[in-house]
Image (tube, rainbow, N blue to C red; front, side):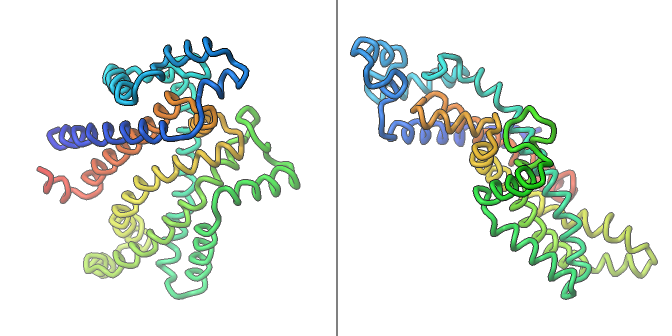
Length: 307
């Protein structure tokens, strides 16, 4: 519990730094949010009223003080464009993004674990070379290129899956494939490297000498120990996954947090952008915390060192 409390305390300055950076960066963007929202023909009185409502007519230091004060009370402000609480907008969009990210992670693990394990067991042979070539191709394909390619093949030519949206059956498959392909490629290489190192350990030679079945040696002993660094990469990659989801959601018109963030940027909707980036950052910190705790579950030595 002390370890958990300490890690939670570490997250507080990180969240403050992220909130501060996001606040000042969003205010550096060119363009007036009131003019974008109301149009160039808006009256001076209307613009002034909207600025006063969102404290945009005050000095930047005062706006920052309002922002941090409200943030401490859990208030993410009202959206300028939607005229609704930002927390409410984020709450509506998070399930779609979480669903997409979880399916992408599941897809990447289902691909990378067997692919990396087979490559390690067949090191130097044709299966190993084919697996590593496939992973290199996966890493080399950016989501903004892979997404349209999958749409052309599976939606336009084959007609198996919908082009965009979230209402049709199977609509999540192509976005999840787009998002999870690069991660699967990276994890495949990581699993292969860790399995090669683990398979050469003395305790596995002892297990073989005792006559344990190869399947038990690989799955129960080698793969479990090889998963520790893989788990770290999964935690780090989740942040990359969430940032990649912004592009993927735009390509597939997926109604998630990434789409909301892009709309907020285009409309200079400061509260929405601040709320979205802050939410993604806190989720990233939370996932890293969970990753550290899972370390102790997979390797009891780490738990003892922590005590």
